[in-house]
Image (cartoon, rainbow, N blue to C red; front, side, top):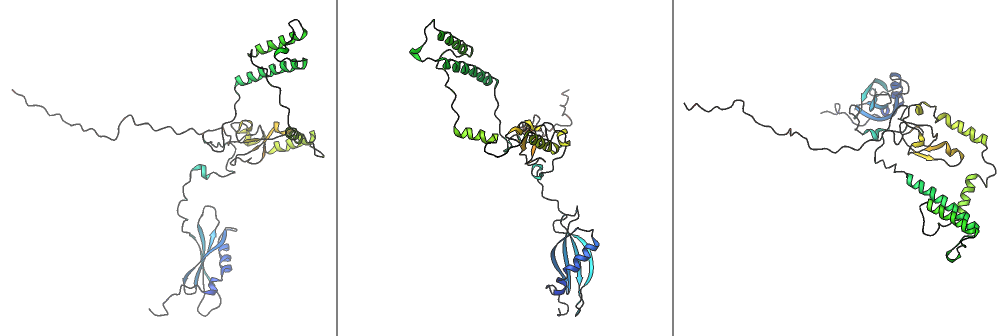
Length: 324
């Protein structure tokens, strides 16, 4: 093969530098704003180069705008050959399959959509449930504690310091015994007095009340803030109207301290449109933790009918010959 027919794979310098000319040609052919970054330069032949640009056209993932330029021998001006849209290496291949839980992105949840929550979602854990028996026991203990406190204010007793049968204090202790019997506790020592709060507990309450700050929110300021927050994430929004439940019963709600905590909280569901925002307890969305809990997969039981075996039956029965 002669030297005249041998093609060099080294790109021509002037053709390789004509990126601006190639981009202008691609933008004239394509719609405005759909020509992306310069991807590569491909040598087609002697003084023939194709410039590849990323295509941002919706529905053309992986496609490229290919602009071919050339230069004549001993010429210093680069000319334009053609501009076409060509598929890239992975343009005609389907993207890698992902389950819906991994394809979901923040902001995909809209009004009326339901986002099922896994039964073993690591973001959630069982909450504390107060049993009715515990509430009744607490009420009885509170009544008994009140009777004990009143009696101790009157003088109290311990062991041999019991009052005389006909004294005034004996009537008070009779009331105490009646309270103990009503609470179901007829023996044992009386409950201990409440523990005096520490300085740290008092300091926390003082900070919550606003002590130590020059000024705090007034009633007007609290009401104005509540009105603003209720506009974007309140009960009247389309998302809340189509929600299966409100935020007050959602496990992703983070309580808010202070006076506004009775009506607002912070959302901690990354797929909710209100993630990281203050929401009204009457607000709601399809990402509610208890709205659509996905059930566990049912265990596979063996089939009742065995369809893997074949029973062979003769088409005609063999008749025995007549002995007569």
